[in-house]
Image (cartoon, rainbow, N blue to C red; front, side, top):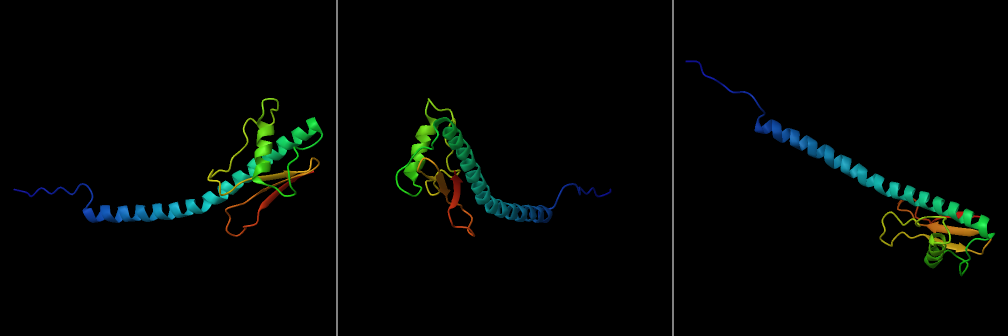
Amino acid sequence: MAKITNNKGFSLTEIMVAASIIGSVASLAGAKLNDALPLARDAQRQANVHQVQTALNLYYNDHEQYPVSAGSEPTAEGWQLIKKILESEDNTYVPEMPQDPLNTGQYIFKYWSDGQKFKITYDTEDPLDRSPQVAWGL
């Protein structure tokens, strides 16, 4: 009588090799993704500031001045001031002021204005650029 062999399927060794290859590729992809996320959040911060610049320019067109803040440098309190003004029921400049993508309080937007010009600053996560980013309005 002939011996019947069943060679269908994969051996345990083949499965282990495939799993280790898939694991290596996944860990490399995850590391690259973690490098890209801070840059994406920085790009979102820049887009958020651009949206606020546009809203402030619309406000200026209607009121012939920017919302005036205290002091001579941008502050978090100044940002809260323009948030309150630009989001108010009477003004429809922005439906909701943008928040930092991390929303942890570590990276915050700051605002200052004397009425005729404004300055917005924000920090980035880019390790090569730790200086605050600045947006002006004149």
